[in-house]
Image 1 (cartoon, rainbow over the protein chains, first blue to last red):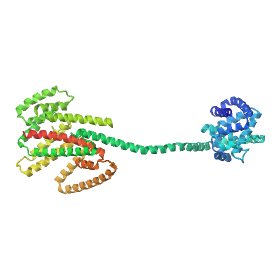
Image 2 (cartoon, helix red, strand yellow):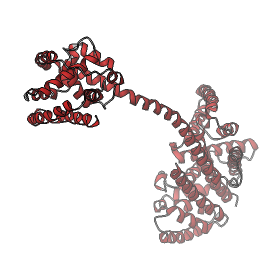
Image 3 (cartoon, rainbow over the protein chains, first blue to last red):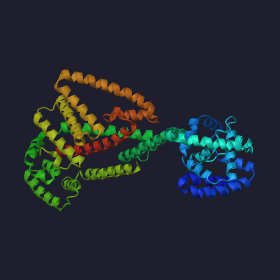
Image 4 (spheres, each protein chain N blue to C red):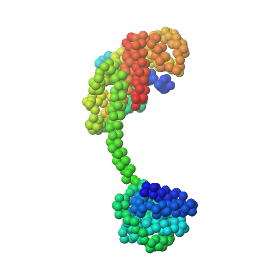
Length: 361
Length: 165
């Protein structure tokens, strides 16, 4: 039985793939197969053919009832016609018997139109192999009966000729059939879509987690920025510390501007002269220290120091103008040493942390 | 001299220093200190404070939310000082915007769902323009703001030390 099923399957596959070019060769094959079919019990044949039916019983009935659906299936598997053509030439008794058996199985599909719809079964066999995986239909296998009747064969031949005329205009219907099969196929991905919806809710939590990680990274950066904040654990406490730091800084700014408001106005003239006289030396890039240093020393001293400064400036690598300038400034103003170095280190640390943050994100 | 950008555009500190020193010079040139009365000192203090904020915000430019908010605030403030009528109007719009942002703040507080809501709100009031930020932006802007404030304090301290020598 299994061997029978296998041979029938390969036969239909060959007809589908190769078509009418190898019709003669196929006819030879068919004769062999048909001999085998005759030798095998009829019930086995029935089960092997029903095993090839891919469509459910209700659809089979529907297809066999309407003549348009018949055209439809034939058009979807046009090789069946070639198959039929090769079917006739060997004038074998076993062949006729097989045809009769086809009619029998179609008659099981719909009990009323036993004779007229017999060829559709063969065409449906090939089309089922074309589109879908082979399914077994228990209802039909259960009711399969070995019935052989010669008059049905003759009727079938007549009907087939009639149908060959209809085939040409039925290409449109085949498209609708493939659309139906596509819709059937889309039911499975719909399950996948729903699964994706489930994943979407999951991705929400993922996004939430990513946001929290982002916030945590920023909190770490802030902890590095605010002195004495590393030891504190707990975001609320850290935020409290950050708030205190910001407030203290703002108060410091206020205090310093107050201090600048009450400062000795003696240097004002110095500042003014600075802005008018230093405009030439700003092109060197050493603007900042030359702005600040003249505030402290008389002009002669300033000139001397500035020359020294410019020497140093030339020795400094031009790649690092900021640090070089600040170092130069430190040479003059000793109290700012610690501050400036702290600032440069803080700046670099901040950039480092920013890079770290980018890496983390 | 009038073009501070060729100085060193990468250094926030030098940019701020240049701007602030120029603003100080302008303040002193406009109002030479005649009396050391408390009101005069207080007025000068206000101007210096505004100049410090402004030069800080300008040296950051509009790259940051807080600097943009600070510039906007200072600009509306200067308009108010110049023209009292339009100033009142701008003050009203200012208040309306603040109200709106505070309302938005309340709604955002619920969707934040973090354990430190009060602290975040307090921080929002400290950082300029913080009322309209979400938590992530707020922390980011706070970090930059702290950096800039530290720079500002250092430079101002240095200048004050120069003056008080």
